Amino acid sequence: MNAKLDHKKDCWQRQALTLSKNFRKRGIDCDYFAACAEAVKDICAAIPAGSLVGLGGSETILESGLLDALRKMDIRLLDRYQPGLSRAEVDEMRRQGLLADIFLMSSNAVSADGRLVNIDGTGNRVAALVFGPKRVVVIAGMNKVAADLESAIARARNTAAAANSLRVGADTPCSHTGFCQDPHCHPPQRICCQLVVTESGMVPGRIRVVLVGESLGY
Image (cartoon, rainbow, N blue to C red):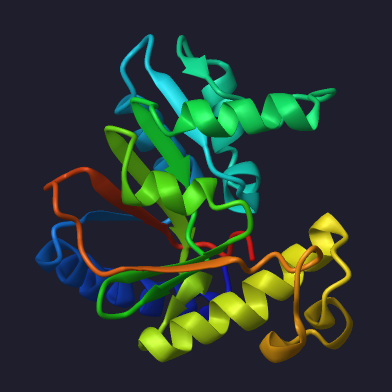
């Protein structure tokens, strides 16, 4: 590992300590792991056998290895990533996920003062974060951390949304320019239909943020 990477990891670790304190002040649990393998092991260890587990659409869940680990567990996994599923079957899993024991997702951005920023199309992911599942675990790479709320919203719009538009093949203005063109973006191609800022957790311990010292997702 070179010195440049060491400094980057050291900075992320310091940022994570600050974030953890700020999240906890807001009633949201937060832990930091230097590597995906450690984070995935910890998340899986906290899921009781037989639990109904829902998933929000997330490249982070795929890249981190979390989905692969979940598939090996004795749980009722609402696996929206199974090959061959119809749109109707995925939509039904989205609905069932709102009553899951545990809902797993990522966040489009994380502000340094401990707020989560998410933009959704169908809205099932942000709906589950707000209310429904007994517990919500948010896994996020430190690349998603922004200095303040304004920067976090900008990241969600210009980094996450633009990349997601390309991923799903949506013919949005940002898929051409790489930057949000909100006044000129309309349904049915628009994927930014709900912007949700999670300021705090009313139920202590319901939301847990797991930060990872790696670059994950969009």
